[in-house]
Image 1 (cartoon, rainbow, N blue to C red):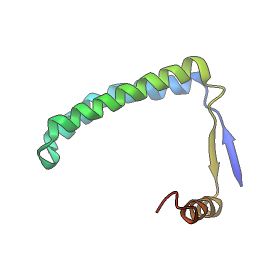
Image 2: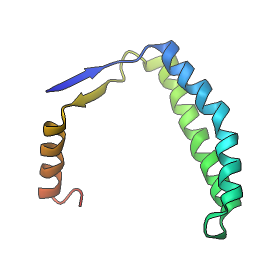
Image 3: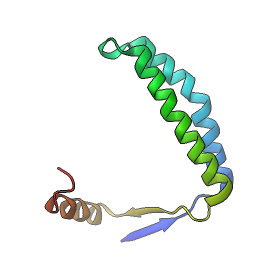
Image 4: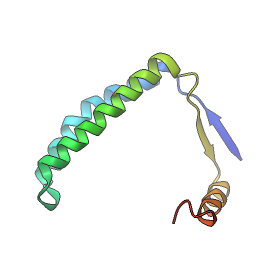
Length: 92
C-alpha cells in the first residue's frame, strides 16, 4: 500500500538546524579519516553538497512545505517497483 504525507515548516526548519550544526563536525571527521588521501578535497565537496541541501531545505520550508510529499510503501510494493525498474534497464 502506498501512502504519502507532508512535513510542516517547523519540522523542515528543525532538520535544517540539525544538518547545519552537524556539517562542520562531519567535515572534520572526513578530513581526519583522509580516505584515499583525499580528506581535504572530500570534506570540501561534502560541505558544498550540504550547502546545496541547506538552500533546498530553506526553499521548501518557506515556500513549498505543503507541496512536497513523501511517499512510503510496504516492502512488497517497493520490491515490485524495483523489479520493474530493473526490467526496464533503469537500475541494476
